[in-house]
Length: 155
Image (cartoon, rainbow, N blue to C red; front, top):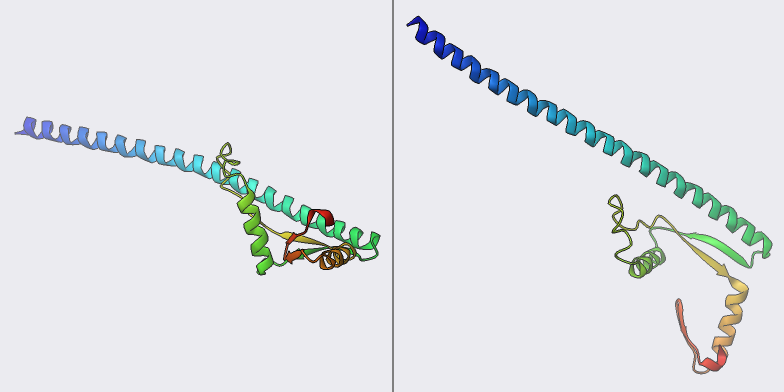
């Protein structure tokens, strides 16, 4: 009876050892995967911070450029930011997305498309005024928002 109990106990201990080994291996594999994912997340976070920093620098540069543009042209030419909640921003965003090559980001596994952060408009009041005068003087011209139709002779 004692030998039978010892054999059963030894088999049970062996089963428990095998199960413990299996659970330990699964635990360490999970820890290793979590570390790899954490490293990947840290890299993505670093890249995101770099992109945000670059976008902020470019925004500042555009603001400075707009100030110079306005000053050097006696306020005839201005650069203004288009508000993200405006219809004009939506139109600009859609135009960019429509013109973008859909295969442009295929080589970059971390890129998932374009993110339009801001849009700017350059207004040249003098040139715009002259253009509108010329277009209005032509009987066959037609102006609609960003597009116009002019006879070749008037161009």
